[in-house]
Amino acid sequence: RAETTRREKSEAAAERHQKRLVARLEKLASSNAREREVGRLRRENKEQRGVMREMGEKLAAKEEELAREVAGGARAAKRQRGEVEVSAELGGHVTSRLVQVKQEKREVQEDLEETRENLGYVVLAENARMTQVDDLALLAIASGADSTAVREIKSRRLY
View (cartoon, rainbow, N blue to C red):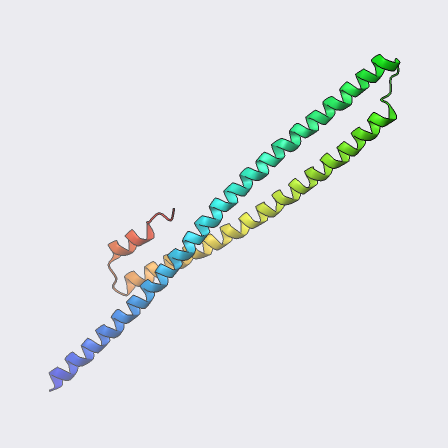
């Protein structure tokens, strides 16, 4: 009878231990889902950086075009009137175009700053998740989980 009671207690303890391990592994799986989300955010951020780069290139091209317009306008005014200054009409057009290009440049720079700030948050979140995964892996191994299986789960590619 005493042996049966010990065996029942041992089986109950093993069952409780197994349930705790299952709960921890479920938490680890949930963490993997978060890591996939971080991967998705990384890809999205990369796309945004590409868009920002493209917008910056377009802005630089517009600035060059504007500089050529100003230079060409000045030469045309010299040829036509023999004057050194650009006509008031052309100057007004160039000035309004320059203001427009500068505004676009400011907007692109603001978008770039926001993207960089968001990237910082993504990196912080990813670091926190990886720390959680490492802690859970150590806990699982310490609780008797197969260390090879734990390492295999940790080394899975997210994307």
